[in-house]
Amino acid sequence: MSYKDLTFAPDSVFLVTGGAGFIGSNLCEALLNMGYKVRCLDNLSIGRQENVDLFIHHSNYEFIKGDICDLDTCLKACDDVDYVLHQAAWGSVPRSIEMPLYYEKVNIGGTLNMMEAARQNHVKKFVYASSSSVYGDHPVLPKVEGQEGNVLSPYALTKHVDEEYGKLYKKLYNLDTYGMRYFNVFGRRQDPNGAYAAVIPKFLIQLMNDEQPTINGDGKQSRDFTYIENVIEANLKACKAPSEAAGEAFNIAYGGREYLIDIYYDLCKALGKDIEPKFGPDRAGDIKHSNACIDKAKNLLGYDPEYSFERGLSEAIEWYKENL
Image (cartoon, rainbow, N blue to C red; front, side, top):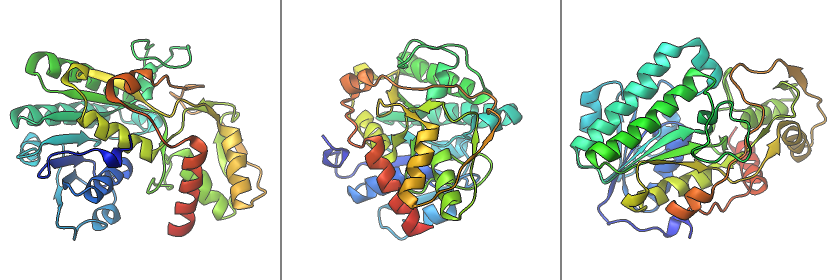
């Protein structure tokens, strides 16, 4: 079943934290298109004003400029909310190695504030962003929930702690929490700029500008790249999931495995470019290979991703051509 076929009570209110960001703005858009009320909470430290401006005149959209590190802001944002889709966080493994204290404050403290605000406001479902980085140095592929290794970065540790709080809030307070372990999400509105930009949009924009991209490492690292539509599906199906599935974390991916160097040449071909990449050092804290088993999400959430990597990449390329 497509997420577009899901139905909630007509007066349902969804709070999307980090709603001005890449994943958050796509969730806002999907819910507004489905006819539901959406409240967006973002401090615009990473989220982009243009993503707010897309919906600001929509009658079902409300924007709150505020910080998840402030509990009072979180409590107000959760007032009369049915479902929380908590996407607000600071991403990037390398940046977390440079700024561990800030990641602790935002990704752990801010998430705990949101869970507590959701509990006090009797929110029905609390769906939150986790990460495949929690698997750390565990070598086995595909990655299966419950088989984690040692985390390799402060970012990964914050997501691990968030999952532990998710378990506790279900066990102690009966708040239905669902952790979304995202695997390399890509798609429309993903920021291609900056030192910590995701690889697909960064390569796309550089190639479109006839610049020579740099690949960190030898390009033979593999990832389970996951198109944004699959992530929207996972979040909304978690909002319909049974309470028995709460307190758990789920791999959210397509279940494939793509090599970085292959993706690079696929992008060159799609854009009609003949530019050889440069190769740089490996990024600190990165793992070599990643690939997800998505059976748990399929069985407990009804997750059934529609978009293969190839289909998602084709749509992403067209979006960047038209919008940048």
